[in-house]
Image (cartoon, rainbow, N blue to C red):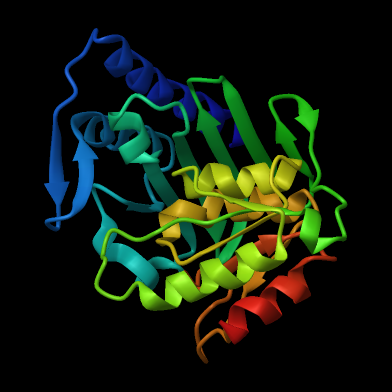
Length: 262
């Protein structure tokens, strides 16, 4: 299965490379009035979903562009694929290199395999439950930093700008206590970068397809993955999409405390 996931991610990544090179058209429009989506998002979604249905016809698919309505209701499906055809669409549409294909597989509400592929750098992050995490063929692990003052922390901002004050408070308190903050534009890659030590921590509220594959990669790399506010009763912490926090074991409780105070 993991080889199928890697190959499918590479094929979707080739669509991104072709669009960037100008060999295929890339048309953009706004989804829900404020969220950018491109024709390459739609083409990659169709490619991945078709490949899954052909290989695993009895499985459910939760994909950002073609089947977002499945949402949290699908998190307990017996066999569920969670797909973000391009995580970091705004970066992709503006000629940046920080965007990726994200594909995760879950059984009975537990993540079993995940890949996050950046075609522009040819970086394939991948993991299987209980088998470690990898960047291409090299095993990865989180950084061992223990001093928050030296930590590099990443976050992101929502499309909806109606209630930014809590985000500003979080940003201020983290910036006061860490070395610096990055806003790179792809949550899946941000979490993978924590997994391999390019970043020391990451926090944000997301959609399930943004973090499913990267969550498994991070935890298999030794990261502490959780939330800085309580998870609502009856909601799986694996799929809860609000107030996500990822770091190593040493930094997690300190960042959790700071963000909760904010």
